[in-house]
Length: 82
Image (cartoon, rainbow, N blue to C red; front, top):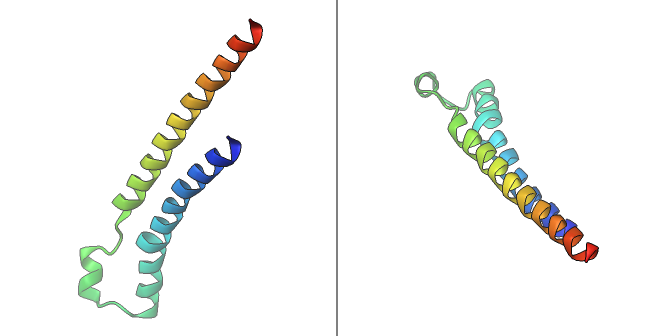
């Protein structure tokens, strides 16, 4: 069970890292490298909404997993007391 939780949370966290790199770090590197025109930079290359969506997605997944594991542990203690 622990491994399954780790894989699920790892996959969700990978989306956060991918969004951070693609939406925030790479535009800065492109801007410093001179790969984009000044007009395109004025429009805003940073899509921080995708990063925020990935963070919210991760938090929701973590909350659901926490609730599920807490319920499983509660049922184990109830069954073992009887």
